[in-house]
Image (tube, rainbow, N blue to C red; front, side):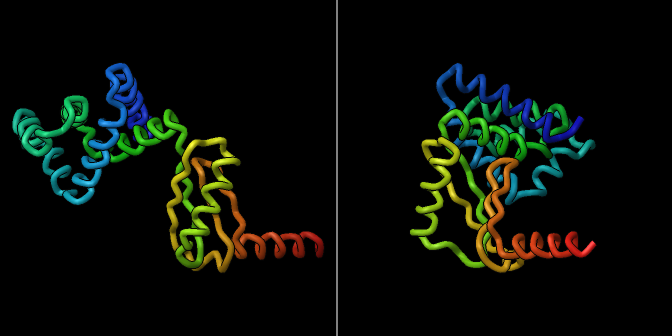
Length: 181
């Protein structure tokens, strides 16, 4: 089964549990920390997934490393470890974040531009996307991409809004090519 699908299932189960217990935000905060720890310590995940290490030692390492984590987060990590799926933990965190954002009316927009956007430009884009997407809050993640030549390219979920110069040039080229055939 696709790892993204599996990660989403774990995230949905965790989200429902956290929602029932009124701890969605707390779990979200702690999952963000867990993701940072796992990303900064890739060897930890490799060691936990080493077959020669006993299950008890792996679980003990999870307990010691994440002892201050919310019980739901700690339990998730233990389940992923027991099922030899700790490698998808960051995908579970991302899927949970998507559920959290959806629940709270938040959209994350990744904006590619040739240069870093100013605060005014980001504020303007936030307002545009708030209205366009009917969200309470919009978070802009600005990525620098010189290949777009100018303009911006925005991605929200699976939807791409392409106002880049490179896209306009490609469309123009395609129109010229199709007109000459």
